Image 1: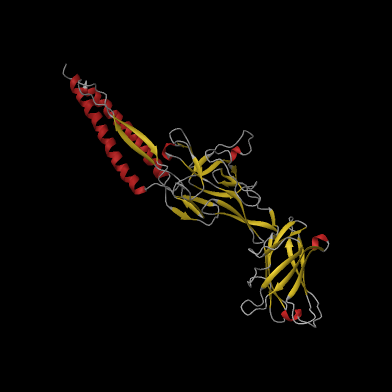
Image 2: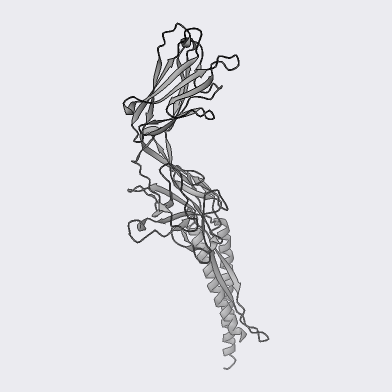
Length: 433
């Protein structure tokens, strides 16, 4: 009977519009929630009459969809570990409550923004109890190869703010001018020396002694010096000796013309460097290329260490951490060095709207979302990671209020249908008095 189906259709209309009002109220309630993804309610008509049969009102059915692929605008903050994703991809996180439970690896959840700060154990945790996940770097700051189709390589990011770090010296450059007059006949032949500090593998300060001894000829000028390198950590042992000959021509006067090796690593003319072994390992010392004034020179009558530089540093304290656009977590030390300690990937899925929505603005991959893949931020379909930023709610309050007016009118109309059907049924019962 069509009048009965009208009643059922009206009831379905009330239920569907009540469902839409629930999603609207949820969106408005979270209009100030960082990273909130709004819920969209769609209506589907229901047709239940058979082919060729009499018409029967089927009504309507409401379906809700969490629009994970719709992002809110980004706002700046003052915390370097406030992170937001600009573009595609989601940040991997886990519940901090799982860290202290020995039940295997933490379940990877996904989010698009978070305010992370170090807890008592040094983990980067949000106020809602989510710990940031990433790939740990090796001791030299490089990120090894990890599987990209699984979360097995991810670990909770732990920043030890009381951590010490030192960088051993592996290379140095000598920019020294030797006096040309000291290689002329009649000179005394005294040597010139200097001491260069370097840092060993434990961050301890050591030094390399460099002595330049001129070759004094019987007549004229030899333009030749003997460079002797000694290591203070080995009790002053000689680690390299080289005979340096300088050019006195018009076009390249004062530059190196030849280098012969007496002991130590051989001279590389392409890079202008020699490699010597100190107590902690090899150090590359750049003394300049043949015919170039980028290292040792022999000019005029003065000994002048013009430019001496080296890498490495003494032991220092970690002062802060920051995340760059590619997801690399950098630790800064008070000695001026920077070290990469983690990399945060971005997770991409074919259908992000098919994920299971959980509380705390997190999502979990599901069969409907498809298989996920872990990308380097800024690579493939993913965007980049913005530090000092949070993502605002995706709710448009003005649009939600407009939808609320439409829903209210639709609900009232369906209620009117039920009231009308009730009056018609009352008239039908009144036929028999």
